[in-house]
Length: 173
Image 1 (cartoon, rainbow, N blue to C red):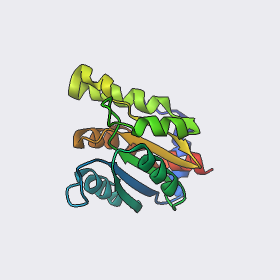
Image 2 (tube, rainbow, N blue to C red; image 1 turned 90 degrees about the horizontal axis):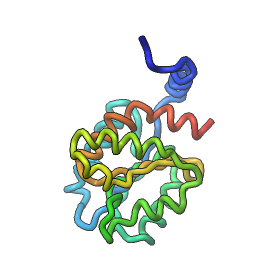
Image 3 (cartoon, one colour; image 1 turned 30 degrees about the vertical axis):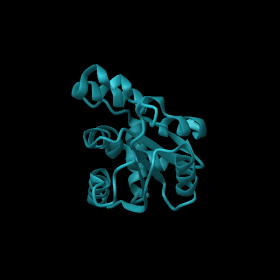
């Protein structure tokens, strides 16, 4: 028995007909470089395997002004989806969530809820420390995950990858 509703399946099929999704990747880190950014490498590989494209990529420090500026810059790009990784914890330097939370025009609370649920299986109660979030800003889907490689892979495999085309289609229709 399928757990997918008929309308959800129809939307996914219509989304697939729209073709590849253009994505921007933003890594928020005080230490990563393009050579050491395993998350960007992983995401690029996953996107390419599905025929999607990376149209912008940037590494920024976890500074509120840099997070806000890159969000605006990526919102002006050809990206349909903007993937942030890093800066979602509760340490004083973690400001990505705070900036995105103020700027998102619509939020997708289910993303963070599901991410933490799936994370619980990997890290136990520490999953509650994640402020993973998603929403819409200026007609773009914005998704923000923790910066650990395991977290980025989990978010991709369980949430982002399976719904990427559907998310882009919903916002763009």
